[in-house]
Length: 295
Image (tube, rainbow, N blue to C red; front, side):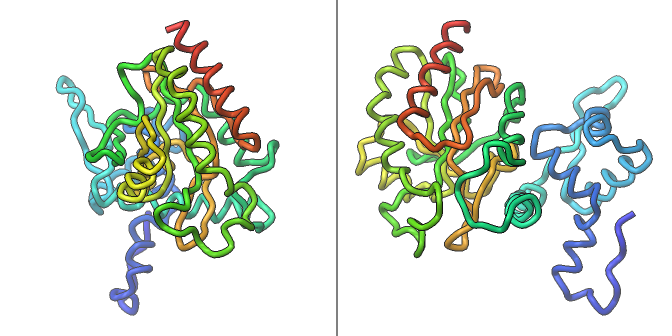
């Protein structure tokens, strides 16, 4: 069971946080809830955890206000375990832990926006086909409000995640020296130019970055972008799909990748790492067209 906070550390926020989520199983349960796994049996199956330990950890997270029990069946009563506002506030912590381990434990310590094609990050992304984006996941749009990343009216949705554009806000010092950062404006322009081909096939296109919606709004207006830009500043999408990031300028930013999803919110195709941006746009159109043709 999670440890109690010693009297000497009652005013230490790090110790208090560790008492809530510092346990191995507690962290993994928050990870799985972010991925859309909410029911006892699926959590047990995914984590290969004993029923006794799972019951204890779920009870602890509910009592701590990280998860809430929501009835999904009445006779007999069965519950799902969903993240509360406090639980969702932990998602940047999870993504930061993932980013740290990708760089310093699984990687060689280099700061990069790319990844080895046979490395752990690439394997994690390439395992995404067949995974479903959790229902109810909404992201702020540059046009205002929060929207579903997947367009339910489209035959397919292309999400292209990119590090950041340099307008309207300046990029961090040394940005151009980080492998893989250059090309975000080019990528948006190429999707803009190909947008008529996407829409003719009934395909939605959405760009995603960790920039604020107001920054995205100014950029979209300047570049006359016809598609939505979505902001993942709270790292809901990053956590839901365990997407790779890198930290610079005191922010976690996406490594460049492209996802194609169907109407059922299932990932059907991924491109990562992306080293040839024009080819990635062409491949996204080709893959989405094929998916739309089979819809």
